Every structure is written in C-alpha cells, then in structure tokens.
Amino acid sequence: MKRLFIIFFFFFRTLAAQDDVDRNLILSGYIEAYYSYDFNQPENNLRPDFLYNFNRHNEFSINLALLKASFQNDRIRASLALMAGTYAQYNLADEPAWAKFINEASLGIKLHEKLWVDIGVMPSYIGFESWYGIDCMNLSRSIMAENSPYFFTGGKFTYTPHPKWEIQLWLTNGWQNIVRNENNKSLGIGTGIKFIPSANFTFNYSNYFGNENTQPIRLKRFFNNFYLLHEKGKWATIFGADFGIQENFSGKTDSWFGFIGSISRELGEKFTLAGRAEYYSDPNATILTDGLKISGLSANVDFSIREGALLRIEARRFISPEDYFPLPDGNFRRQNSALTTSLALRF
Image 1 (tube, rainbow, N blue to C red):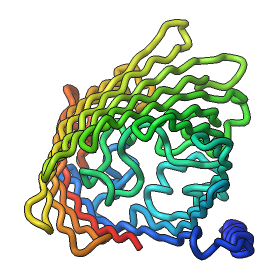
Image 2 (image 1 turned 180 degrees about the vertical axis):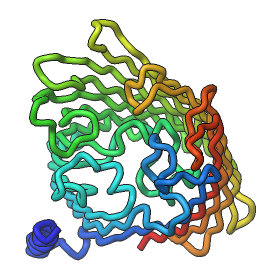
Image 3 (image 1 turned 135 degrees about the horizontal axis):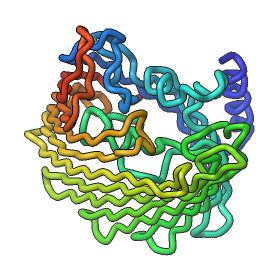
C-alpha cells in the first residue's frame, strides 16, 4: 500500500511540472457505503458467490472507496485511481497484494486527430455497468456484469471516425487480470463498437477471444456482449445480452448466455424508480463456480440528496430451478431474496 501512495505522489509531482496542470488535472473521489440483508441468513455472511458487489450480509460495509487523478491535454492523457472496499476485496481476490488497490493506472498518447493508444489498467469495454454505482440504473450489478470483466490490463486503440461512432481494439492480459497467471502466457484480444445514432439511442457490441487455461493445454474462449440503451424524457430502458463459448478438456465446447432488461422513470426532481429482469445460464460452470440457471428480479427507489449524492434501496430476488441457496440449518432452497440500501457520494 505504501508503494502505491509513493507512486501516487510522484504522479502528481510529474504532472505539476506541466504548464497546463491547473486546466487539465482533475482530482476526484467516490465512496459508496451499503447495508444488505439476505433473508436466507447465510452463516458466512456472504451473499451468493456469483455476486462481487454489495455481497456482505447483515453488515455495514463500504463497497467502493476511490481516489482518482486524471490528466489530459491535446496529446497526452493519464489516469491513476486507488481503491478499497468489498468490490476490490472480492473482484481482485486472486491478484497479488500490491495490485488489489489499483482501480485505474493508464497512460495514453494521441497518434492522430481521431486515434488514441492507451496502456495500463483501464475500465472494461464490455457491458453498460461500471464500478460507479451512482452511474448505474440499478443499485446492484446484474449477474451478467458480475461475471464479465469490470476492467482489463493491456493496450487499446480508440478510433472515432465520426462523433456517432467509436471503435476500440484491445490486447489484454487475459480475462480481467492485472497480473497474468505465471503458467498462462497467452494474451487476449477484443473489439468494442459503439454507435450513437441520436441523443436517445446507444448501440454497443463487444467481444473477447483468449486462452483461459494454463499451458500447454489451451482452452479458447470467445465471448460476445450486446446492449441497447434508449433514453427519452423521464424514461430510460436498457436491453443487454451475453453469449460465450469455451473449449473444455474433453475437446468439446461449452456455452453460457444471459439476458437483461432494465427500465427506469424519474418521479419528480428527486426520486427515480427502476426495475430489472434477468436470466443467466451457465450449466457447465464455465464462468460460475457451479453450473447454474438463474432468473432474477429487482426493483429500486433512488433519492437524489443533491448532485453527486444518491440514497438508494433495492429489493432483489433470485430463482433457481434447483435447490442451490444454502440455509443456516444446512438445507438448500431455490429462492434467495435480499434488501440492500446504499449511500453514494462523488466528489
């Protein structure tokens, strides 16, 4: 942790030497606290293991606390963000200790008027949900978002041939890794294409291809994500879909997929109501710990305290065709329900 803050200090010092630092350096922060109650009352105080955000039961916790510095002029851009919280604890559980505090760390250079190249740890180009809960329609993240990358480490080219189009090409350290597995020297590749035909519509398609096993046995993964966002007046709707395939040890191919639909409506200047329906199928446990088929429903009410401060409460329910969710008496049931409240502040 000490080394990261030393890097943080020298990052600021380097930027401060630039003449345009006051105009182009932005310091910001984000913190989101929460309390979640799981009605199945898990003995280990953890919600289902396919959740990585807001996953502590009957406990006041910090999902994400983040400090960020970003810099950009007409040729160079850089970003450094350090974090703590249960998001970092569970999403980066397999990373070395020094890496678990890194949210972003990247440097970019403008090669052409419409082309940037960036290298480092950067937000994922896959999906429409992020680690900033205040920017998401629903309080909690969808099963699709929780089980696809929130970030990638590598290099990316970003090309904007037109204000309505953005194309990204990625070369990564695999599927959501800061540090590659020592026994897997493969790199992943990916593409993201965003089209904004009008102020109301956003279309996005992204994919990923890589080896997800240690050498010499290679298990190739090909993943696709699509979403459509529509906003008009006080209404907003999102539809998203995932589909992936991966080789298995028997030489065959396993697949998984998911769907999500969310809708929200502003109720006056302070309140927003949102709902979500989702389905996720991974019968061969390619992504999830266990082979599962899960349906989910959620509804949340948001109260905007002021700009950059949001209080939320959400009811969420999962339904599985099999007894999967543990009970304190050692039995299992098909349903899991929880209430979660959060308070987020961006500064």
